[in-house]
Image (cartoon, rainbow, N blue to C red; front, top):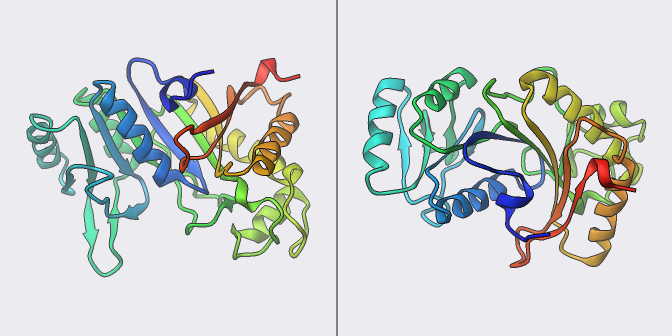
Length: 261
């Protein structure tokens, strides 16, 4: 097993990566962008929802324009100097949020072939480690090639409530775990099964991966392995990755679903 996110997420050649779920999507987006940039690829980071305005450490330049033709011209100019560009349609200075684009706009940007990779934060979770998606979510471009469902392992052992789960009542309905009960690996796996099936039906990507983030301790690494065990018969999923984006050795485990026993 290699430790690069690129290898573990099966990022070969070119594609559109859509990140959904909760517990580290933005961090993963910019970590991936950095790895891809360092490998010589051109990368666009953006969103179909909203993200905080990137810092210079996250993206060397951010382009803002809601007109596609103008946006493409600006992106072309940026690529003369940078391999990684972030883009949005508007910047709300009051909230500090960068508003993204409709999925069709991202599809248009992909068709320009300006970028080897477009990474899209395609879901919102209000900075909670877990979420259950509503009927209008996630917001996926149809050209998605790699779907990555992110989950925060730090939710294990926490109480099922709005403090820890975005749309906790929906999570309860989906998993059978009652509000106020302790979130465990089985309920996370049950939610993952529902969310990955729903998202896969929306965009039909080539790869569906589960990214279990925040495996910052051996206990949480073990929790990741338990979740992987519950998902071992889910043929919609290609890989389950347990990782800590805060650690230099980021990837802790990587399982091909067909090989989990």
